[in-house]
Image 1: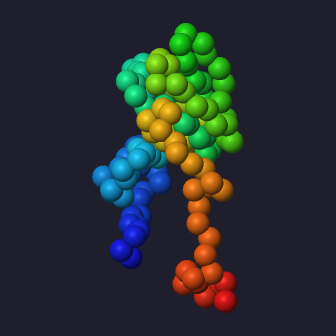
Image 2: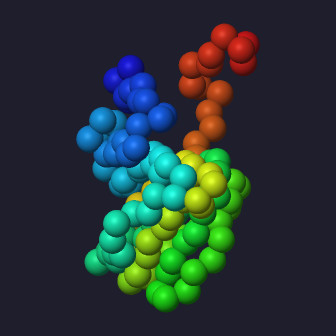
Length: 128
C-alpha cells in the first residue's frame, strides 16, 4: 500500500496518539479512555490547533473557559485553540473518546469539494 498506512491499536489503552503511528501530516488523532471518576489532571489550551472531541461511549463532564457541562455517547464538541479545557469521566461511567486536533482555519476543502471520483480508478471486488 504505497498511499496508505494501516496500524492496529489497542482500543482499551488509556491513550493512543496516531500522528507517529500513521505518519499523519495534517491532524493529530488520539483515542482516549478515562476510567470512571478519573479526570485529565490539567487544564490546557492551544496556540494554533482546534480540537474536536467525539464521545464514543460513556459519560462525563467537560469544562471550557470556566463553564462545566455534561457529555455522553454521541456528543461532538469543537473547542477553539484558546478555549481552556479539561474533562472528567462520570463517577459511575468510564469515558471513551476521540480527540482530533488540526490547525484552526486550515481546512481547504470538504468531502464533496475535495474528493475525486473517476471511472479510471481500479475498483474493489465489491464494486464490479
